[in-house]
Amino acid sequence: MEIEEEGPPSSASSLPKGKSSQIELEIRVLQALEVYPLSKLKGIHRNFVIYGIMEFLQRSFGRHFSADEVLQLLDRFFNLEMLKPDDEETEFLNQVEDFSLPQKFHVKEEE
Image 1: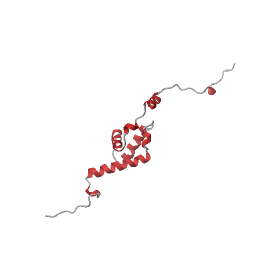
Image 2: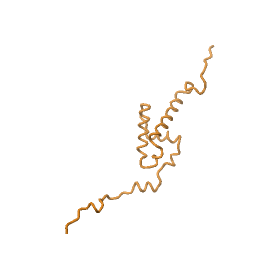
Image 3: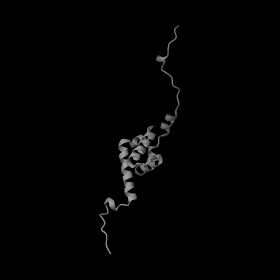
Image 4: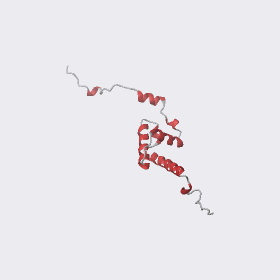
């Protein structure tokens, strides 16, 4: 009966493949945050940041990532509830105003 020697527990070869791929995924998410700052998840750029992270992960792993998957990954590291827009900000974004040129651009009628 042969006894196989195992590497040290900290070696990557001793991690199950699922665990090492999970670690790789988490590292890639943190790398994506260097390009797409987490602070912008709170503002009007939220969807662009999520899309950017989705694209970064897709290029890294060669498979599609949904917005929900990205948010679940980010939720492991950060309290995303704190990044939701305030009521005041939501009100501002939903405010609709009619566009009009300033008065100086209007053609003055000849009297």
